[in-house]
Amino acid sequence: MDIDLVYLYVNSRDEAWLSRRRQYSQEGRNGIYRFRDNDELMFSLRSVEKYAPWIRTVYIVTDSSMPEWFNTENRRVHIVPHDEIMPPEILPCFNSNVIESYISNIPGLSEVFLYANDDTFFGNEVTPEFFFKDGKPVIRMWEKEFDPGIPDGYYEEAIAKAYGMIQGRYGIGCRYIPWHNIDVYTKRAFDACRAEFREEFARASFCRLRTGNDIQRVIFHFYMLAHDDCTLIIYKHNSRFIADAVFVAASLFPARLSDFLFCSTHDFIRNPASHHVAASLFPSRLPDFFYCSIHDFIRNPVSRYFVSRKPRCICLNDSENTTDEDIIRYQAYMRKLFPQKSAFEK
Image 1 (tube, rainbow, N blue to C red):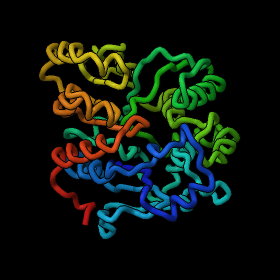
Image 2 (cartoon, rainbow, N blue to C red):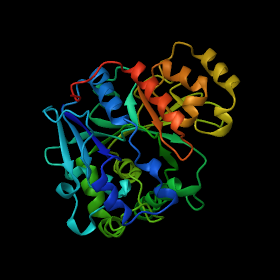
Image 3 (cartoon, helix red, strand yellow):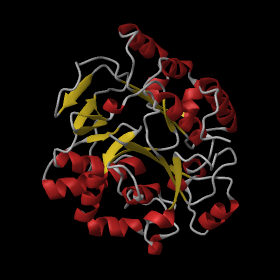
């Protein structure tokens, strides 16, 4: 089976793109950390070449120029301008939620495809079966106390909008949130969902910057669940550390510990003892994924310890707390993690 990989990318050093954005820019949820380029794409592509060489084609959706290091001669990668997949009346667009909703329009994209933000990467060898097994995509979400009626901040607002749309149409509840990592989708589900909620997506598409009306891409996973078009793996967690995984819809693997190591919550980051307890419970278990902000990752050695355990999928995301020093140390760490240039580089 052919499986492609799609990224969104912005070159924050592109003056023409910056000039266009300044015409619409706002503070807060549209801050610079949303599009700052810390060479994440370069490191992510190195991880693709090292740990997921079976990926057929890499598509990079962008409205900016590519970075200087990028190898434009690599036939395995295709640059997709926004105007190739999005209608002209909604351009320019700087809202990733809107752009993501159009990625199934990429010409030549495989039916089953992966989507990754450039701050995600593979930390260990991963096979196609991690994302697609027994004829269905394997989607991963985590269970959290989440009240769609009282979302906590912009991120949960966008998830709540998606949840409300699916619940209103199908009457089902699915109070799970994305695992904040590399996701798998089908073009069929993308296109069918967008057609079924045509009016809602049309209204959201005119939001050039992030707003409270955004629809998080988790709607496509909710839609796949509503149509029994995927296998769902739920990672349970609490505010200290993840203990187990509960599999829903199908039992693909034996139940196990330490599938999900999540460290964005304040008390989890600030309590190294809980991490060491978790590590002692399952010292040899290969975790499925790890998520952390760059700021917390740089400043907490326990976070770096968990990355050293080589989770399959990792997200180290930029945030409003990231300092210049954090970025320098992050880039140095990533160069040690992926020292070899990939074929995606000059």
